[in-house]
Image (tube, rainbow, N blue to C red; front, top):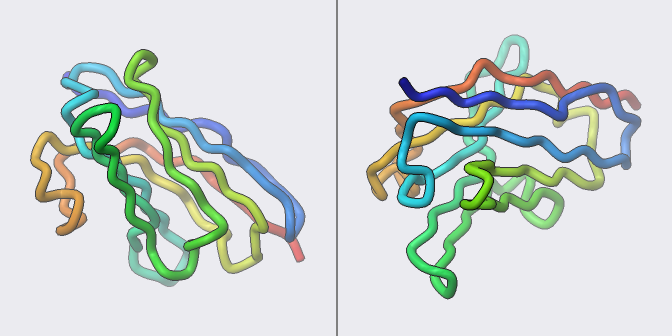
Length: 126
């Protein structure tokens, strides 16, 4: 049974930082594409970032335009955990952030994932 458990959300002032974590179990983590999505009230769920791991010298990441240069996705295969470092946070980043996983490399570009976490709330005050 695959489980994805997010943590690290909270309330932060604009310009501040947070680091989200997603602990995964029940899947071949090192071979999985991992992603972060977010959902704000009244808005559709949107892609935030994704990371795949082919080897130590072939780690690929991609980001949604609104977060490029501010957010960084990373993974620790030894801990089965993926992170989202969020800097220079803006009120527009307020949302419930979800971790997602898929064993297919196509998820890296299609953003269609098999497994989802329950989410962690991030609130950025102005």
